[in-house]
Length: 147
Image 1 (spheres, rainbow, N blue to C red):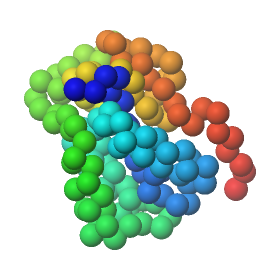
Image 2 (image 1 turned 135 degrees about the vertical axis):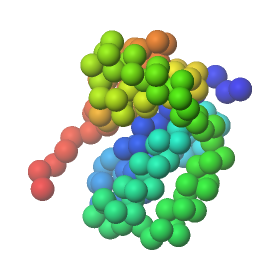
Image 3 (image 1 turned 45 degrees about the vertical axis):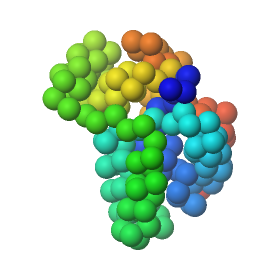
Image 4 (image 1 turned 180 degrees about the vertical axis):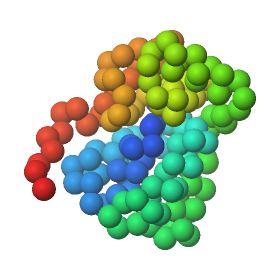
């Protein structure tokens, strides 16, 4: 097993395939390529589901269903944490103890269950550590230009 597994929240993967995401697109592509090369990437079924819906329906230039399915198929080569009933109960505890939304708590729980060292997310508290998983925002240094 690779050391220092890195769990990716959905937004990182979306940016990697959303060409309209500016600097975040490039940074996310680099993160994904590095994790592919090192074999350290970790995802969950929730992340894959959210990714599929987002890239086919919510980004400015949606991907075709076929293209999105092919990407998900490739990502299934990574270690994937399957959310089960126990995950739901543990996510409820995280929500109660840390005041995250349930869905964010389920992401955090999957990172914990997958034994990740880091959880990369734009949406969660950068630098916070929960049950051994440290949350990092890989876009913290990227300036967002006004549209």
